[in-house]
Picture (cartoon, rainbow, N blue to C red):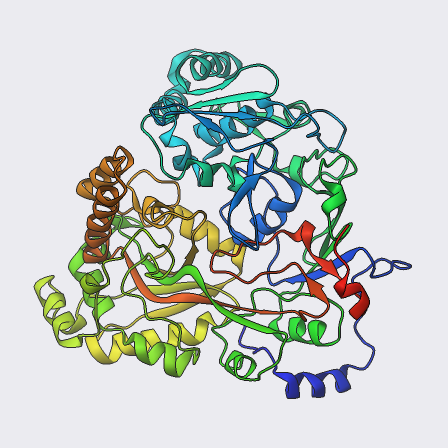
Length: 589
């Protein structure tokens, strides 16, 4: 979409024209008290905690499910979630033991058990699910070996002579025998790592590490007699009657491309601390419409205002108290398809010289100053230099604007003056101002290298499927860190990582990440990761453009409990909407 977010003046005019045409997203008869209303700019794809890597999905999932630990949105410190306390850790740093809260219950009243966490984590580790974040579990003893074993079992299933059920039973037994996740009774969960993992606590606070209620989910198993795979049907995670959750809320309503409603989980152990009892989430695809909805007071919070839209500059400079603009632990980039062939034809982007030449031809300063007009921090690395205190990104090794050097590299690769580089496309999803940036970058490639690039804009679901299956040459992307460690950015470029949609493969890069995973000394580990990122940015499977900033709208006098931060940590259950100053001064119950 090319429509832009209106600023205050435009919105006022639009409201006058719109009159009373917009209806409230709240059910009739509902009052604002106890309800927190906000916007999403795209549809939720799934509420499966092990089945997504999309921020929009995780925003809702974090309200439905509670992992062992949670991040305090105000302090960014880890605190107990479904676990009653932080874990006990063995002297060698390899064995973690968590105790589940005695009063932790599922929305149907069942107690939350250690086995529920094992079931959820197992779904990610089993290759059947093709989970994006399976690699996060590979620090656990036996997890990666089991993942590979199960993948091989499925690949050879047709020759095995076994039924899917027989193969599944064998896999279950092997998992119990070889993977370092054990239930020591109903409430004790023990995790044995291959090596000490500095960020294990952070991982257990990530939504993918949520539990899943086995008794209800197992009623939706899809046993594929042809492939041997066993998965939970997607329908379970949208079935209002079947879905069982352990977080602050339950799913009450899901109207596709319209709204979701989440109501307080009556069995949530900490419901007394909740600032609201209902979330009403409006799904509004059109950017102008989102702005109007917010300005009209139909929602309390508008997160994720597209900073790439030129008119967002006016919001940032407006001085309004409800405008919150801040750096984020994320990077906007273009990914290059590194596969040897695309659709059976040789892929010129498999050559790192071509990728590097394209990156050298992009003037990032012009992009952030004249196209996005937000002045975002120009990116030379994938890890934002300001995001972590214990890691120094190799900014000095990053690609700079140097068209002449880019032309020489193209000639060396066999494409002098861009000759022979044809049929390439920049693939992007609609909305968010991506088209404006793509047009500018395509112009730079044409003017600086003689390379013609077509633009293709498709809707989000089709876009994510194309990226996942390799149906692209150049694809627009952005990545936000999931936990506070450099590996949340670097691991996705390992050759076997589920998020490595570019299929980048550098054995030395993989080896450095493996060495870092085994290194206890923090300084030595940081240097290994830094060396790995230096290789990554030299090979340029991605073209970093700028580090992300976030723009959100909410009135701090009315909406309490939102703390803008680089890591996007938000506890929606702790947000409180107040009606007047007296209420604003009162603590949440």
